[in-house]
Image (cartoon, rainbow, N blue to C red):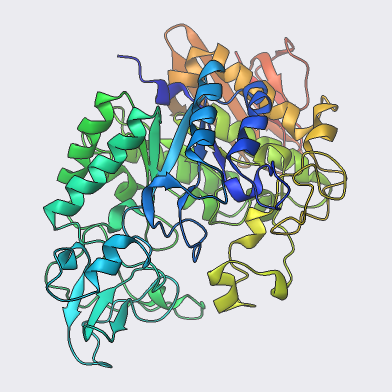
Length: 527
């Protein structure tokens, strides 16, 4: 059976920062529609759009107050339907963000829930009786402080794993499940092709609300929630039957899901893979371990090897180097005169490995983290932890479409400042340069579509390469590709020959013998 999401390249759009169509400085749905031809030309197959539901924006859309409506800041339902229709004409699929561990504190459900202890929706959220100042347990919020907030009107505590404006839903209540599944189906019927599930392993909490055990980090300076193992407020066993039920609903519409498996730094591939089930839970799961590796062939080989092993031959990996919550890979790994060469190597790894690759808007250009002054901060994480943690604003700066002062993003004042290299690093400039990062991404995606081995093939690590070279083989029937990546800043001798299909340093069709030198940061694909 063919699964479209296995062969797709998926592109994440942070809507506030992609394209503004009305001059208010904030990207919107109509702006996304204006750029569909660019995305089609890039070669991607599906667009994951970060939250566009109605929200008071305490966490920029990840605090939803109406699951069935579009926030006016992004447009109207008519705009959304128009986007779905226009995307369908270009054979592009639309994925939405599903944020259902919590709602906004301004959601009508929570307003009812906190109105009285006898309200029918009281048990839609997680409440605990008590006295002010005597917390129900030691659970910490991701954004700092206790995960419990005192509610004066009913003299009770409610749980919030993130901001106090984001109260956690009680998934042990069957009415919550019924309502959320109905909301999911509402969007499926409108033509949505799938969902990214925000913090998917947090939905259920320990029924006894037991204390989390402490975690000691030594010299490191963690956020408070990292000072404990989240044994009882994450990854509870009840998640698995719930995801099997959700899978049945999604499969009915041939839609897909990809889950953000949230947890302790630096990630756990086995935990992420466990939410795939026996090909009957999530379609895909994110393992973010790769985002925290040092620059070395051994580090990347290890994380890829562990991820492939965790998923096994039946389940399908996802591949990701960037998203809206982590610093951009260009800033993490690309530096100095070889910055674009390193970025091309990482793009090759992402787009030739086994699994479904996800690109974050601007990644194809080598967008770096922006420089945000303290008075310009919007993200609650940055505002709270500055200067130790600048928050997530730096990786959410506007897309640079051209070299003008506003980058073609808006005619107004952008909600965050554009990156200082926008005049040089922008879509228009890179489209005109056949050696640009954008051109390299287009070549890789085109090759991926042409090659059954790169789309669907097996993955096996290549033995006997140089210490600084990571190599692997992809094979599907008679199509066999070898990929070699030189992480070093000096030439490396390798002994795996073949015909060049694509290389950062060589011409297509070149014949390589069994012993030759890979150039510094060379990425090569051989037939």
